[in-house]
Amino acid sequence: MQQQKQFKVLLIGDSCTDEYVYGVCERLNPEAPVPILKKTRVDTQRGMALNVQQNLLSFDIQVTLITQRELIVKRRFIDERYNQQILRVDIEDKIEPFGGNIPNEHFDALVISDYDKGFLTTERIFELVEWFDGPIFIDTKKSVCPPDKAFIKINDNEHAAVGKTTDKMIITKGPKGADYQGKNYPAVRVSVFDVCGAGDTFLSALVYFYLLYGKIERAIPYANKAAAIAVTHFGTYVLSEEDVNEICD
Image 1: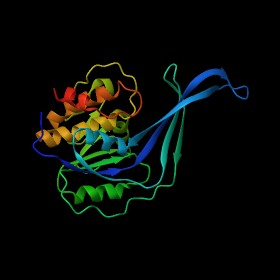
Image 2 (image 1 turned 180 degrees about the vertical axis):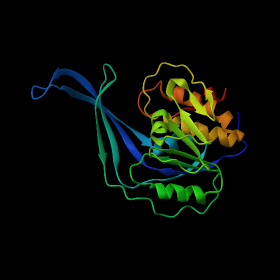
Image 3 (image 1 turned 45 degrees about the vertical axis):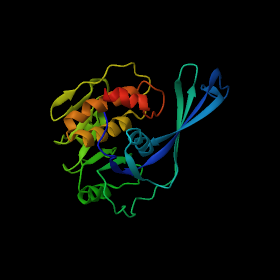
Image 4 (image 1 turned 180 degrees about the horizontal axis):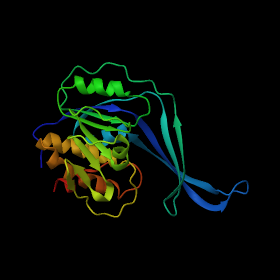
C-alpha cells in the first residue's frame, strides 16, 4: 500500500532519553534488604515525543518536532536474566514552558504528545488547538479534556481521571482494544512483554492511517495492530519496515 504523497506533521511535546541499565543480581546488599545489580551493559532509546517522532518516521511521514531543551532521563535498572525491572530513577531538569514560534508552513496534522512535564501548559494546548487548521491528535497526561476539535488518545486510567467522554475521544484499554463513540475495536492478541511506549506507537499509527484514509474508524484497527507489535518487544520500540508492512496487510 503506497500513500499518494509524503505527509507532513507538526509534533509538539515533552521528550526524554530512556536508559536501560542491564545487569545480574546475585546477592543482597548487606546494608539493606535490596539486591545488588552487577552492571553488564547500558542501552539508550528515545522516549516520549521522540518515540512518537521515530514511529511517525517509520510510516515515511515528514516530522517537525518541537520539544524542550532541558534534560529528562528515565533510567531503569534491569536484571537481564529475567528481564525484571528492579528500580527506575527519573532525572528531570526544570522544564521551561513552550513559548516559541511555530514554523510558518503547511502541515497535514498537528500531534501533541504531552507527558505533563511542564513544556506544554493547558492554556498553550488550547491555543494550539484553536490555531491549527487541520486534523489534531492529542495524547496528554493532564486531567483535562481539550476542545472537541481534536482527537484525544487517552488510556483507561487517564479517562477515569478526566471523568467524561467526548465525541472525538479514543480510549485505549490494553488487551481490551480501544473504544470510540461507544464501539469497541478489539486488540490483536499477543504475548505482552513490555507496554512501555505502546501508546506512542498507537498514536503514530493512528495519525498515519487517518491521514491515509480520512476516517478515524478505519485508522483505529491499524493503530491496535501497531501497539500489539510494540508490546512484544522490551523497552521503547520503533516499528521496522517489516512491521509496517505487516500492519498494512
